[in-house]
Image (cartoon, rainbow, N blue to C red; front, top):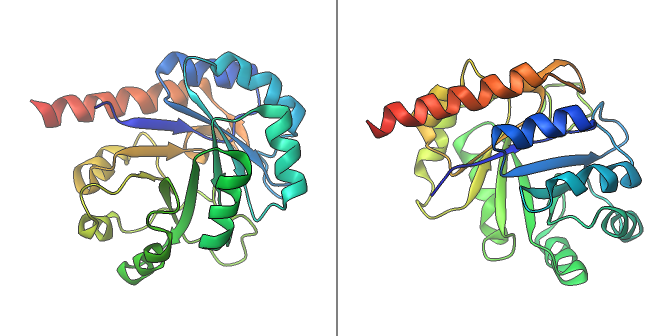
Length: 219
């Protein structure tokens, strides 16, 4: 099975095209006002049309209320919702039921003990996303360009479906694959020339590095 790769925080036609042409399985649109990658639902709805039949479009929110989720779903018609805040298992279940869409729940990790937070979400969230805990003073739950010790993921059940995020780039993704062998990768700031500005060359380089690492491990 091919490894899923999500390019997140897309805002332009050019960046979206680069992600799709490189083979992204998922493309993410962030709805969080404090993020430099923030996008309004109408713009995301227009952009996501290019992804139909090519990649799953993911709406990323942070503790969004039903009114905002209603607006996003109506304007964008996402394939998946990503909850990147402090949403409870009950909230995840409510969102799934309300929209009939799969939900990916994000968790911020620093040490092995942080993985205990997954337990009540098992069987509720359809997929997990593991990001690094934000640095002190950051107002962003993700997209901070920092990573965590990937070795803590080696204790996870082999069948746990998740995406690895947090500080990934073409320079370190090979190491991440060798250590954790995650079923999916999620990258945002690691393919940017400035906060919120995707670089098509960095997107292409990231995919090339992943494919090269996979080819070496299969040899």
